[in-house]
Image 1 (tube, rainbow, N blue to C red):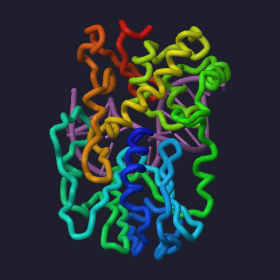
Image 2: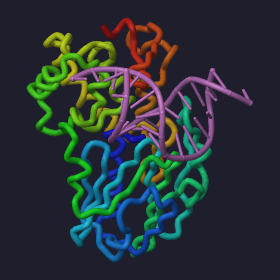
Image 3: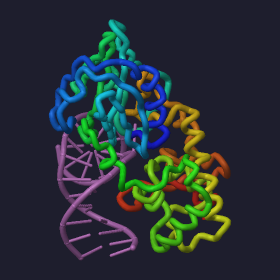
Image 4: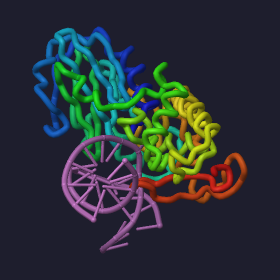
Length: 289
DNA sequence: CAGACTGTTTCGCA
DNA sequence: CTGCGAAACAGTCT
């Protein structure tokens, strides 16, 4: 699924496409993908999009909100009036997981769970192969985000905050800690691996064992990696697409993620993996200590 | 062919 | 506290 850079990319693109449009109709093709009552936003106008962690929040003009979590395989693909479907493959190498081809077909398709129609004839498709993602209509979007930790690209994310996080979780392994949404919001498996390489820290290290200079390296690496990914439009491994149907470009820049057995781009040593908290951690045994 | 894997999150249990 | 496994689900990889 999209992590913070992917969701932020989607937010920026969708803002341009959706703000000012009125919701004309909503087709719920999979009931479990939709929470709340869709009729509460039919006829309402979209006035803004915000993001918290990996959650997208669309504000409407009647004090209702559409809250979206794409989870593992969710996509939001927008299509202008009477245009041909824009989902198309490009020359990104697929490393594994889900191939393009299940999603590379005209819309809607068998994985299209929700379809929004707007007053200008454009449409927004929510596709989700594994059905883990969801959309919710609510007048209290806070309840979906109040448990989340600091936003890593906000001013509140400073060196003191990182020191505090480490001090409060001394026994936690650093990779699972980075992915803990109630601690730092928005980092998932890909970027935790990339951040730890940039900071030269092994994923198995305990937070409490980090030297002050390593804590500083982490503080620098977190926004640095996330901003770089944002600049590339996010990472497309297989499922993730930007709302215009194109792919993110970060995968080509990944230093460790998805590169098991390949040479480290920094030192040439072979990239290794191990399982940590149920997730695969990729790391360079030479660069990271 | 079976079992292991996959970008997430939450919950129960050890 | 910490961490693991399982559960939502569907498809590919080994």
